[in-house]
Length: 529
Image 1: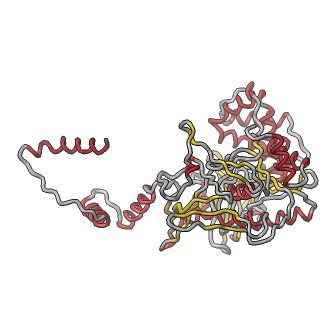
Image 2 (image 1 turned 135 degrees about the vertical axis):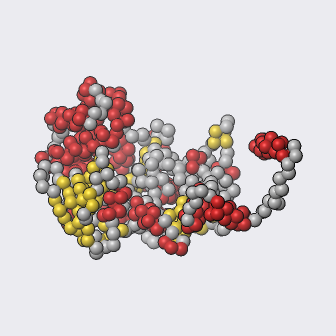
């Protein structure tokens, strides 16, 4: 149909020529390279607003990748590559060691990483950056300020801060250092004998961070572990395999990758487990993706962990970063990975347009009354597990839900979420130096927060604010705890409201072995709850 419309259009345009004029056309060339060369030549010779040849080539290269029908294909300049490695892969980089945020045009320090020049220089969360070297940061984008702070390790950068409650600006000179953002920010003992490890990224040190946390918690008396990958969108495939390797004996398959026109690559454990046969629970949610799903999927397939939470994101594609000349790099999808049982975790929402790219098993294409039917696989012990759309937990538990007044308050402030966040942050910052570890949110805190919301013109009524006071109190409590005592303190404050973690701890209380945990889940029939 599209071709018929094209032909009809050509005929209409051509009619005047038939009345006495002839158009001589060269024979179309089948040589794409020659076509591109001719187009480039005409642009350079005749276009009113032409570009430099280097810029044309760059745009052509980006256009080529954009039209591959690969949602993850991208081209990185040297500057973009550095940003990608720093922000996505979280590789080591030279800087001061601060996480900064743009809050209503002000550049605010949100976190200071441990053992960094920022911490050694006395920077505090809540400090506002005024100048970097001699340049004012007012009006600059967040990435522009970040680029000024980053640099070669060993070089110096001068930063001027404004601290809340302090009249005079604070001027500090930092010597940049290699900054390592931990993949595991803290590890805790819960309920006396359960080691809790929040794995927040798969950077180049993730497996080392997890191994050290397992060893440290084991030395403190941990008899079981909770590995939390909720909200972890993935990262390095190699690190995912290394982390899975920590829980198996040599020879166990961890995952496999199928490429176009090549034999599958099968990855197996190569070392002894660092936690022997101690029971494991893995927490997942809809934001657990990619490398998180490799770890959760391999542990589930081999009955090595009980998976609790909600179905993971479903990203089972492998991207490869290819270095190019001049410091450039290209990222394209090169394969699809599978768990040890042979299931794909790739969800329908993220499938490549051309399914011929990699070979898909027929049971992955099965449909039931027009909707895609998820294929069934078996774990080592014969348990039913699902493929084709994320890791479905053994125990499906949704997070705690908000009450009706809390939902109404949330809906009211959501359109102005950034203003709400700034007011919340400012209120917590005001009280962080006045609290002890066992503090409780006081009525005057909520009143101070309400006044900040009014000043920011957030369209929330007083009745909505008062009715949703539980949400307000909980938010103030967690923000203040984080700013005053760190992430682990904030986490402990949130634990009573973490239904998924509470469920994990309950199962670990009742099941002393991995087999008992899985049996309890099967008996409870919790799937689909």
